[in-house]
Image (cartoon, rainbow, N blue to C red; front, side, top):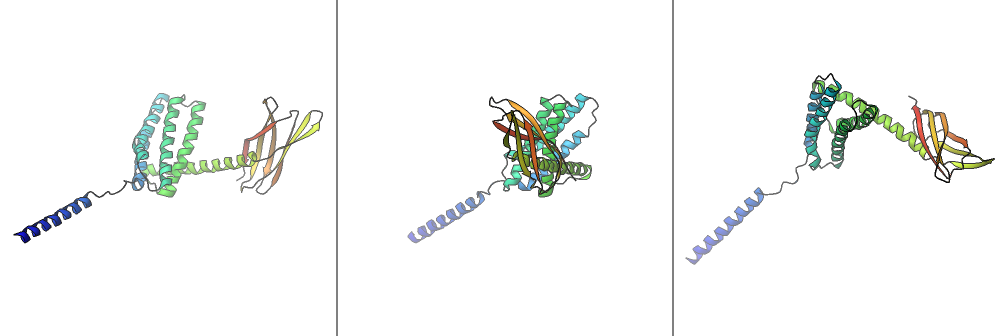
Length: 263
């Protein structure tokens, strides 16, 4: 009787242990539900919905603005849930969030500025360039693809993104070169001063028709503008930026106002 009771007790303990093990395995944490594998599918779906609305006929300005708002909103509604998802690839997550933020920028432009006004066009262009550059990254690095005519539209956007990235790089390069220039002031006597800096083109770009404005701040903090320029500036060349003024500047700030890049 005692041995039988002991056997039954042991058997019960073993069964209970097995049941707990099976239950634990069934409730095992599978980890975060990462969005990496589906992110481009979501982005593609959002684009397709936007393109479908953008193709709708609209003749008047009010109809065109309403169409633009609806198209942006359709893409936002599709993509925004990705903002709260977890990603293994932090770079991909950053790009996805940046893309959603740009869509919101476009939405704000349609609300904050008169449709097709100068400021509307300016702000829309800024957001448009950001968006196309991110789309180019999605295509080049993460395999974003559509189909049929939608792919043709995406190809065009990516091409424009490449051009926007090129223009942005050129602008950043020339601004960096000029902004790093160290201007020296020379007292020429009779109330005149010369401001001069020697700058080397350390980039691989040839710049032409470079116009530079020097903001000369006097002792009272009043800004006075003077100008200097560069006709042609090839890689590796050093040029002298020079201007004269009757302002005895206490501070000098320079910035590029115009430039071209030689192909």
